[in-house]
Length: 180
Length: 129
Image (tube, rainbow over all chains, first blue to last red; front, side, top):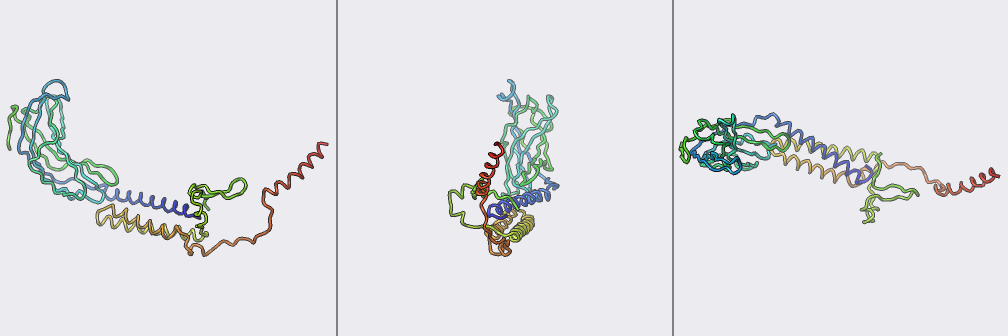
């Protein structure tokens, strides 16, 4: 501690240790918080096509088109340890080939400070709703859920499913639309 | 006492600066930044106290306003204040200087070795005979 550099070294190292302890404290205050909120999903239109899927095996697969509304108030999730939320809408269903299929249809990133009241109407899906085969036609039960990944400042990234889901059946014929 | 990495002594006892900045800007060598021992202890207590207090204030403020950024800013402000208070050698850190002994006339170390050698040589030559 006799020279400036020695004092500066000591001071800087101490500051960094204190900063690390504060970050850990920030993580501890929000580690056990419940991050689910109620979510309302409505489906307005469903259409089905049978097209060549170039990414899969060489046979025609089912392609679905869904138009939906999402309403959710995400304000309670944001606290001092949340940097952004990654939301995604996924469809889950069962077919003859597979016991469980999950497809992500749409996603959105919400940064802290942006509008947290989600109220989206007549949204089209961002990603193709391809099935592994022809399992969508006449499928009685396709469940849509909104989930999110909480990106924190310090700590673990929890994957949370919103409470509230909607189930819709798909039409029996191709190119036929069903309105709800 | 911590080992200084800024300057050291070479084989001949000359003071040598290790950091390149002292070779590039020689006027920096003349700025003395030492503190006496009680001053060093006081400086350490001051900066640890300031940073801990700013950490507590920052944590509480960040928790209330729900922004961790404010916690970081307050700790950085505490760091800046303690830099100002403890890095330069203020007079309050030099109030207990060490009491050195008075200067005695002494022969420097290399001279002593040279003076002893001739005596050893004559002793050796006598033995061989």
